[in-house]
Length: 253
Length: 323
Image (cartoon, rainbow over all chains, first blue to last red; front, side, top):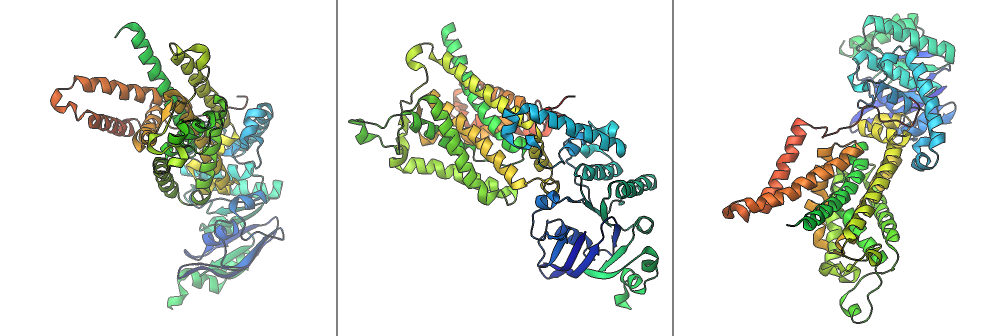
């Protein structure tokens, strides 16, 4: 589904991603873990088009996507969320969802003047879908509040809801569990699993919460110092000497 | 002043306030909805005014040709003046937007500020273009021959209000649709808007161009009202600063607020002119500076105590759907 090949990304003297190659299989929920500064988020930014790789390639569904802009990558049905949620805070929850579908008629200004009827009926459709998604993540009661005034956990749910509106084939989740209480965490895990099972969405997620990773993800990819250190099922990763070393700072031994 | 005079005065006040409302509507698209920091409104004001003047006036002939220079004179009806002003301003905005809109928002501010002054100085120094510092005089007014001078202002008021209303309706429809939703998303978080599949550059460009076209129409309305334009009219104070104050006061992100702000601030601005006459003679000659001060203080007060303006943005903006 997603293939990263020998990607390098440097910022000045720092090489954040170094010769990183990895594969994500379609229909999997793949975990991406590694100590802070391992280059996980940078790799996400490279995949999602925010940064261009200095060298190396990124393929999605066997099509090269490195060098495309974020909105073009979105159009190929690859969606990413952010570590710190980036909702449109002075817009309502409903509007935050309704903005997601690509190629809306009413995004072309003359259509709003010349074909208001067609725009209106498409808006109605999008609204119905948005309401259904809000029901799914149990945020329907909050549809008319500003997204900015949601709690941290609700914002995480909003991110999930927004990614559903995008109708993606694959989602990159950057720390979906950060700052989320255990109850909500369970809901999040259930939602992700349900989406994979019912809609066949592939997930690649960065996470520091080991319980969540071990419970949800298979396989798990470990990154350290900008490159892939190990890959395997949870049990194998748990017992992997190199991984422990990377986390506990083996370089000082 | 007798009654007729008072009415005439009020009419002229409302005409000017409505013209300013058009500028506010234009700025509201750019700043209020998209977060584009255009501080060169005066430039579009200037270009709109000159374009409409030259589209509607004939080339000077006879003896006049010796004294009045202008690049072109098309002698077309008023409507073409408005359209021409919008078109040229849109083009200028496009040219400014290409290098600046991909960068951080500060660059747009610097570019627009610089370009507004540049245009004013070009019109001032290049006589062949639009008669240099003397400017252009005797701009035609629509329906003027039919109505005559005496009650003409009433007719022009009607025209200005109609144009303002049309622009208001066009913007409202766009903003309350998915188009406006994308603009507002870009204002809130550009990176997230891009990650949500929106071509941020393209939407920012549309907003800049559309807003500038509206400003061009404002400039044209002004030119045909005063019938005479010269470069010294398009200063940053009257061309940019006061329009920002109006939008801030009325409520950026609300088109009704933009119009309301224009009327309120223009009323205060003109009202303060009367008050200056009542000042003791010692400080009366400092009157103009006191007025700037008053408007500056007013802006501060608004920003501190009511940052969203009189009206502020509505919560539910997308409305082109069944509730």
